[in-house]
Length: 110
Image 1 (cartoon, rainbow, N blue to C red):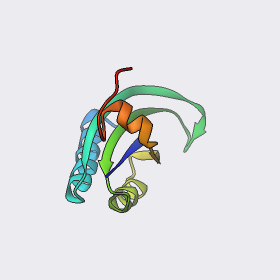
Image 2: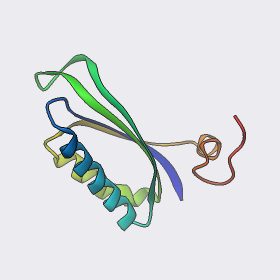
Image 3: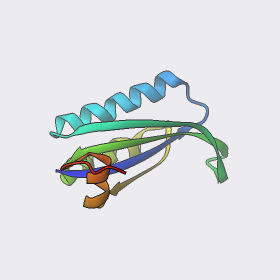
Image 4: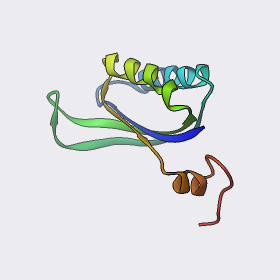
C-alpha cells in the first residue's frame, strides 16, 4: 500500500451538496479498489492566482488516500469528466512523510 495526496478544486459556484456527493463518489471508488480515504481536509473557498474557466474562486479539498497506485486511474478519470471539478492533482507521498503522518507503518512524534 502507498500513500497519496489528492487535491481537488471545485468550481466556486457549486453548492456544498454537490461537493459532498463528488467526495463520496471518490471515496467509494477508492474503497472499491481496496484502499481507504484516511483524511479529508476542506480548505474552503479561495481566490485563484489567475482566472480559470472565467472564474476567480474555487473550493479546495485535500484527501489523504492509502491504496495501490493502479486503483487511482478510475478516480482520475471520474474527476476529469466531472463538470464541477476545475482541477485535480494526485501526488504520491514519500515513505518517510507517509509514516510521519501515520498513513503507513508506524507514526513518529513530530
